[in-house]
Amino acid sequence: MELFNNSTLQEIGVLLIDRKETLAVAESVTSGAIQLAISNIKNASRFFQGGITAFNIMQKFHHLAVEPMHALEVNCVSEEVARQMALNVAKRFSSTWAISITGYAVPAPESGGQVFAYYAVAYNGKVMSCAKIDPQEDEPVKLQLFYANEVCERLKDALLVK
Image (cartoon, rainbow, N blue to C red; front, side):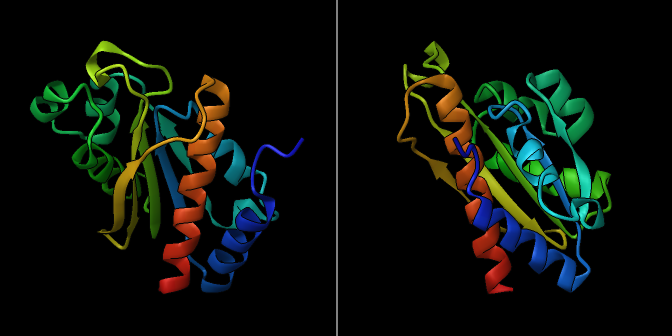
């Protein structure tokens, strides 16, 4: 069973290595799945700077400089939080590119009983794309893998535009 879209991942690796650009990751709902996927790309050490998995508001504030008042209002799940996570993980790791995701893998009262996530892709200090992801899965682990693959696909799309 293939957990990740290997062709997408290898294309990301080739593009980043050819351009001599780097990547950092900030994630919460995916619990490190994006970092796992990226780290398994051939020659990942040539572009992958590292990542942060931060689950709660305090850690997102401390490690990713997420604005705490807004984060509290939205339970740390919004397009703006995803933007801040991507921009700040790029700074923390001195990376050209950054991707982030925050959301829900299980229904929660704060989410209105829904599962969804917000992702962002940043390049050189600017957000290239940021949007809500509505999942096609409902089992938490499958949902996390779906989110991870979606964000990697969005990164690949942004790399192809640049």
